[in-house]
Length: 162
Image 1 (spheres, helix red, strand yellow):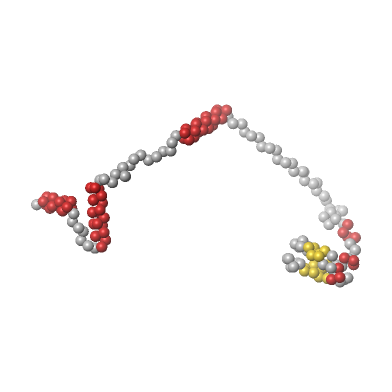
Image 2 (cartoon, helix red, strand yellow):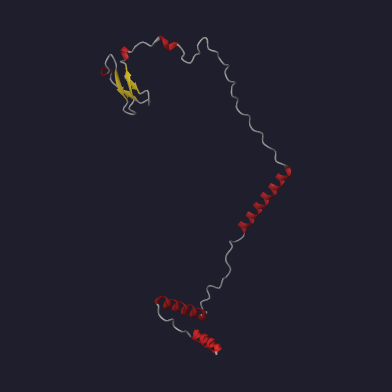
């Protein structure tokens, strides 16, 4: 016989001999629901009350008319676009299309020569090297080495004070 859980609809195939003639309580191993199962050969007859509709109103109860059927909503009407606006949008689309076409035909934009590859300027390299040495000396706490340019600047400023 086939047992079907009333809670989760799990189905179990059980031999008829396992079920006593009086029936027994069974439990679903899927959800844990317990119910009374009758033996298939000795199931009680269906009650005569089952033919009575539970939802039917009592004879003395007033019955309201059924609600009107719900019709499908009509398709919303599309608003017509003003022809002047449509022309402007069309012109904008054409201009955008033309700009994109031109951009595809042009070569990629590149940076102009920035002069970064001029390594023959020894004065700049020397100045940067001196600045790096001075910074390192200050970080170490050593006295900063006096360069020729610094000594000349100090001599000029000291003469002004005289």
